[in-house]
Image 1 (cartoon, rainbow, N blue to C red):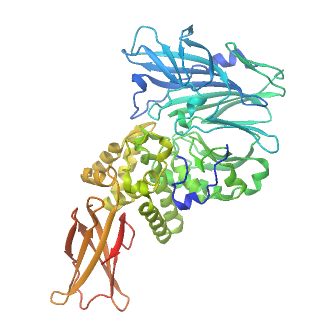
Image 2: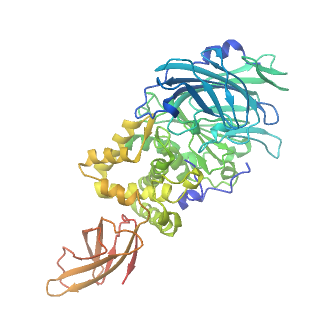
Image 3: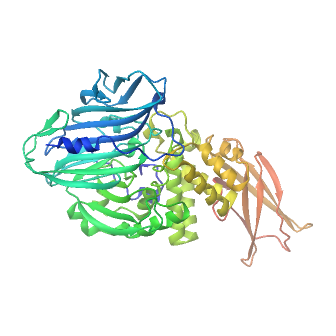
Length: 575
């Protein structure tokens, strides 16, 4: 998911101010209807029960300007009660609609196309939409200071509808084939596997699209490029890039740990002048994919490309084609942490997608925490604890965390969900679950959750159930406290040494701003000689409690350190 303002500081450091920001009929006919998609686990029903299972998207891109011509062929499964289809498409002109190759009337408004469906139900239909125009968002078309024309998809959260007729919801995942005709001087990258790059003969002049689509004036040789994503993904991840990009081969990763059986080909695409930056933060890309494949599951897609782009975000985790902000390449600020974060999204957010944006933390929280786990793996426990402590400070300082729950069912401006709850607190929820359950049960539960919902959608309760089964523990109380209500624990502590019993008695008060929390708390007891011992106590969901530490001491401690390993989302003050 996007690296934005409220991403952890370690990731945000690499983010700069967002950038202001003739097809042959035989070829088209061969690929309009793609093979059936893989059976997805945990798939959500689409709008009104209609489920798009595949998009075959054909685009003609211009030499100059922003006008595109497109044909979208959607394979849909519809239940018996569905007699119409509403597709999202903002502003672009719609020439015609076909349903099962028959011309069909439709109702067009500024944001959608309403298409009547033939009588029947519980069947599969093919809906084709011809359209054209200049997208005002979603497909970002720019000419840079050197005169280079570029186009980059940038769809999150619901901006695919500016250029793709779609059910633009995270819960409606589908496979996608891209067929793009563009000037041969532009390299076209998209989701999935490259199927074809074919120079078109006699392609100068108007390019007439199949089915009578609006012609696109062309003054230069053109190339037809096709990509196929055979795993279902939501529309916000369906993107193309068309730009004069140079290719940098990162080699093969995760051999034997890919859903496709072979190795994962990784690469970077940059503007030619930025090639000297490489491999830069991508030097660890191979290790990142290998390690995530071991601790979660095999890599879920056909390839992984990293692109310099015009995304408004610091990074955007489009499936198999991660887009990073152009300026982070130009200024050499792109970090390994950002690469790890966006790579983690290929599992969490892409393969397993939140059913609605209310559960965005299942995407951003996982990617945030997995980037910190990468830090722990490569730099050790001290660096990991420092990262978690920094995230905790950001959570405590954020008004959003104090006011809203991590699972936010109220906010409808989804860009506002790019906040400390979705990123930092979501990551901390996972961190506390790991501490609560132990590494074995935690990672076993995460793997079970992932495998149960791979290529589909999930909700917060799906994660809870998987972790409960893996651990044998009931976790409803945990998710109620840390995910479904605002805040964090505010602790005021004091202690005294009882010489008669040789014990330390701790008093813990939880502030009145939030309801009290329940959690284990480690206390480190240090003596004057610098030696220390530890005890873990069970803090109850009470305003105040006195707890005697299970340590027998010969003398009063010099000091107590609460939560030395940084495992509790709490502020600490001494009385």
